[in-house]
Length: 317
Image (cartoon, rainbow, N blue to C red; front, side, top):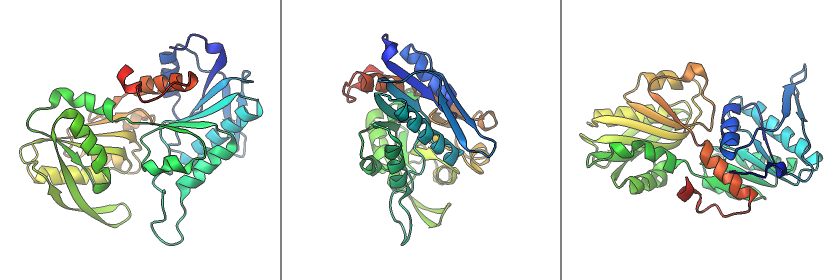
C-alpha cells in the first residue's frame, strides 16, 4: 500500500471508472479529481482538478468501446498532465485496443497498433502499463518502457478446484497455443488444440481437434473475446467430439455485436473474464463470471512508483 500519497496522482477516464476506483482502494488512495467531458460538438474536454507538478501520474483508461472516444480521452488526459508539468506520466491501459492490427496481413493495410503506440508516446506518456496484448510484439512498437501484465494466473486459479485427470486445457486456435500451454503447465493437466481455418473475416470453420477430449472437462483459453464466434464454434466442436463439460476464460471481454446472445445459447457452462473492460448490466448473464485484476494492477503501479522490478509481482498476489 502506498502511504505517502502526496507524490502520486491517479486519474481515471470514463472507460472503466469502477475498475480505477478498485485500484485506488487497493493502494489506499482516492482517485484524483478530473473532469472529462464533451463540448457541444463532441470534442473531448479534460481538466485536471488538482496540481500534478513534479508528481508521479497514472492515467487509467481502457481503449474499449467506444474505442475511438476512449483513445482520444486518454491522449487528451496525457497532454493535460504533460502541460501541467507532471514528473512522470504512466498510461495504464488495462485493455489496449487496435492490437489486432499489428502487421500488414494484405498489401496496403495499416499497422494501426504501431500508430496508436506512436500517438500515446507523442502525447507525452513516459511509460505504459497494460495487460495481455493480443500480439506480444506490440511492446516493441513503443519507444517508451512497457510493463506487460498477464491475466492467466488470475484466471486459472478460478479453475484449480475443478482440475482432475479428466481436465484438459484447449487452445481455440493456433495463435493461442502458447497461452494454453502455459495454463496447462500451471494446472498440471494435458492440452488440446482446435485446428480451424477462416474463409473470411469473422467467419471460421472448425476442421479438427488435436488431442484427446472425449469425456473430458475442457477449458478454452484466449486473450480476448470479441464477437464470440471463435469461442462458441470451438465449444460446439468440443461438444460434438464428446467433451463432458466446457468452460472458457479470457482477459478481455470485448463482447461486441452478437457475442452475448451467442454465449447464452452455446454449450459453454461458465465463461470467466477479467474486469479490464467494464461489463454493462445488459451483458451480465449467469454464464459469465467476472474476476477482478485490480489488485494486480495496484501492485504493478506500486512497483512502478517505487522503481521495483515486476518479475516478483505474482508472488505477492
